[in-house]
Image 1: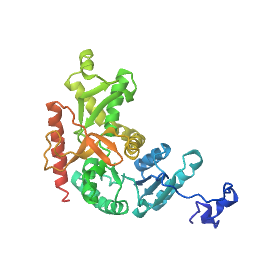
Image 2: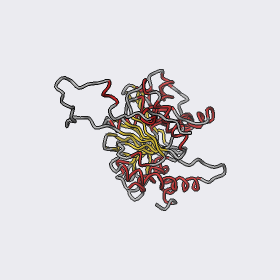
Image 3: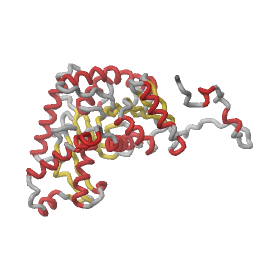
Image 4: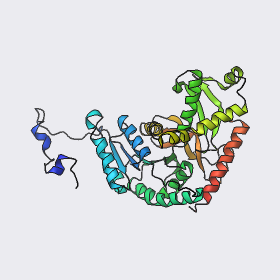
Length: 354
């Protein structure tokens, strides 16, 4: 039995409901919109699983949107998630929350976050999983692009770099408006480990993981700074065991962070929620902050101009999307690792036939 979630569904006329509680000011002139009226911001989240709802909840509590649209293939779960957020209305900023299995609910979005993705079946090859995700994205991306032709697309589903490429191809959007969450969270894990070791706030640590969001991601040791001061040489000088083997162990710990969380609680959610909310804030509020996100990397650091591949590089984000990519000063070893990562991703993309 369908239960009502608003008084209008229970038969109350909402049209003049407020007239019994509020009256106009003395001049009796009805208010009219002005040119200075702020345009409302709409964010849509595709996929109402653990990751999608953590992102929606974080965007909601950080007051980044005036309207949040949720889309999922499971109508009952979707309605339950939407109601659960709506019932917290008295404790949160005023945000309109809508949901539907139809992508039309995302119409006129400023930002569309895609978290939906096929899960790997035991014994399934990586290529088969990719092909199933492409089939899913064919159902998701074109309708979203049609309903919100000026939106920014933020891809979170894994494998995020390949699926960001897929979203770019299927949407027809310029590459500056198709962004993958990439190594933004990996870099946060990297900064956390360094901050814990040095007993400082992670926000005072600058350190990047770049390349593929996955096993071949590259730790840019030369980029580490603390409080604006280069820190890698100091770390090596003060720690005799800071050799190449130790550095690779730290990189593996960063890469394995998600696997550890999944092994303990079954899935990741909160950290990726905060990570994506930070990207949403930079994009929607035109903050011009630099984040390591998955971008079209052709021509950077020796990656072939003819290879349309998305991987993570530090990029300046604003209301128009990717405003520019930082020209990092990489060591030759770091650049070589990045190019190997790009070659692997490009080969995977070529198998998709897009």
